[in-house]
Image 1 (cartoon, rainbow, N blue to C red):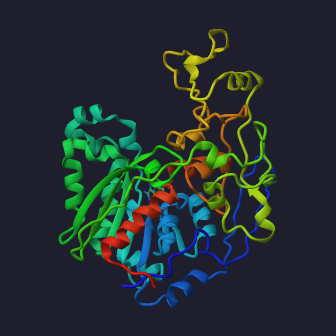
Image 2 (cartoon, rainbow, N blue to C red; image 1 turned 120 degrees about the vertical axis):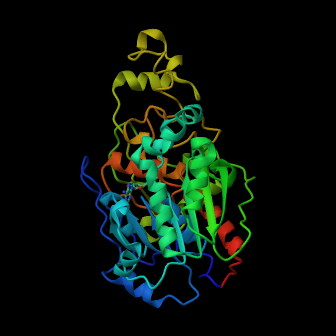
Length: 417
Ligand SMILES: C[S@@+](CC[C@H](N)C(=O)[O-])C[C@H]1O[C@@H](n2cnc3c(N)ncnc32)[C@H](O)[C@@H]1O
């Protein structure tokens, strides 16, 4: 088997980059950067050795980007959320469908409808809120009720159904580490069985920070194949860039900044920043997009200034507190510039208080959140500010996905072209 050339970070779309500057408060719209039919023509032109890959629950495409960078031909992204689909379509040369995967009767018909000749690899991150919400102890105590406790949990079985019916050579599914503890392990066992006969399956829990991402984020990956290969995983001993390494070159902005397009102002100060800016060419090389933040009142900004890096709401002096500090002790938290960030979550779309900038009196911008998730600056996100925060918080960091994808390449013995 041969894949396409190992790619550099941003070579997937050889099309002009057009930053959009919408009016403040309006959603960012991203028209697909490719002419109609380009994805279909691209798929038709793929060599027969190409490993055709489909991303289920594709979201904004973090997992897809990592697999793309590792040389897989990710040619379809499916997700129920139209804004996620708009983001996906603007960043990938792929067919995109806004579809409720839980209601798809025949995955095979869907694949035909999308114009794919076959599916070699399925990847995906079904929603994991159900597990994330309940702690491990609680999951244990719920025992058999867990599977039914939250309908969304069942989407992992929707993923398994697609594998069982489409029989790809290999698959990778991402989820939260708590998946391994549900029903004292039986849930995972049942899931592994539901991929169908003939699949070798293994799981692996890893922190994104040990794969070079400037963020502590533990995730579980399942890898399976039906070609009898022993499953390999990445070497997870890389050092993590810090928050400053990740975002320290972005121009200072005030709370409530709404300019979608800004000049970078200064040069890169770290290798990670260079990586993030790679692939921006022409007029796009000098500008940063989506560096927009929430507005904050004077009192909040005063608190943000007072807090030292790493401090939380409980450290706010009593007279300034608006919430009960016993319940909301973690409500505010100032990032530590010299360390990786804590997990960037979709909660960012509700409020950003757990992600106060280490030096500026405001919470993170959309672009800063994307950087901490290892999305390159070239990557564009559609929708309202809160939509973009949610998509970014939900994503698999592309750099993490890249290392997982490279380990799948080694599992399958796939050589470079
Ligand atoms: C954890 S996010 C996936 C993130 C993605 N893997 C990435 O790396 O960017 C889960 C996604 O599942 C989608 N989703 C939820 N229910 C769905 C359904 N029934 N059918 C299709 N997509 C669904 C959500 O819209 C969300 O984008």
